[in-house]
Picture (spheres, rainbow, N blue to C red):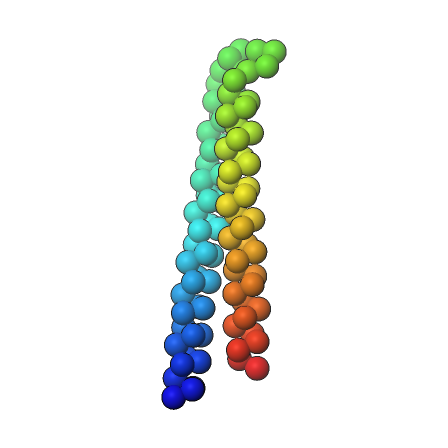
Length: 90
């Protein structure tokens, strides 16, 4: 019975870890896509980005902060889950 419970716990940990690994890749892809869209828009319309303190810069900083926070949180969760998996295997 105890072995069955441990197996279920391991399967649950693995599923949660895989979910958060996907979150990392999704938000990394969204972050990269947003950056590339802004870069290519800057290349196409440099005059639009030459304002002394443009409002798009605040939006960009906020977006990067949100993406960074989500990615960092997911990386920490995946790391902790991976450590729990290793401890349960031993």
